[in-house]
Image (cartoon, rainbow, N blue to C red):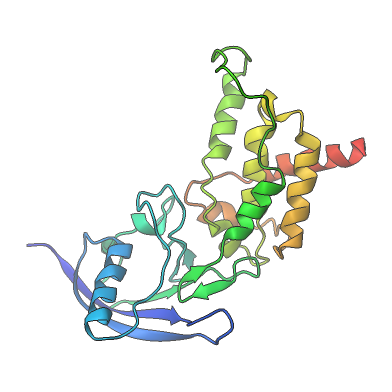
Length: 251
């Protein structure tokens, strides 16, 4: 027989960005421990709908730890207590019978609340539009070895590219900084020959847009690295700073 747990779920409810929100408690009974956290929220929502109440709004898509949309603060941790995992990869076996589980949306000036647990993360899209791309002539697909790249740099670029843009780094930072996200997106291009042409403009433009959108400065506490579901390294922030300084020197 599958093991089940019962617990109290404290959920942030907020009807709109301009209205005040508050926590509301729900008693969850006999939830199977092999249920994912988002499936547990689905169970709660079905119950609320059956009672004629408003379901809890939360963001999700792939439920495979790839899209980064399941951006929830669970018991004080972005994505929950599991290391290297998103909320959709968090299972109820992580919790104990009788626990109180607190769920909140991301807290950042750059991520305003839309409703309940859903926030507007379009600020990251605007940062990417500011410089997170390369301008190249399209045509026939070149050979894979046309531009030699060392394995070390290719591996570092792939590690940086693993960032899914979920915003956990912002939620973890006491200053609400997006430096880990920006540095990962700059690094994945800065390490490759294809990204060199626009390197100087990219670092300046993306950092300027980050500041413009209300994100704070890096605190150097490494909270972002600790909570990142893809374990993106803060060494990328050092690379971003070098790219920015080099760009300013060229000016």
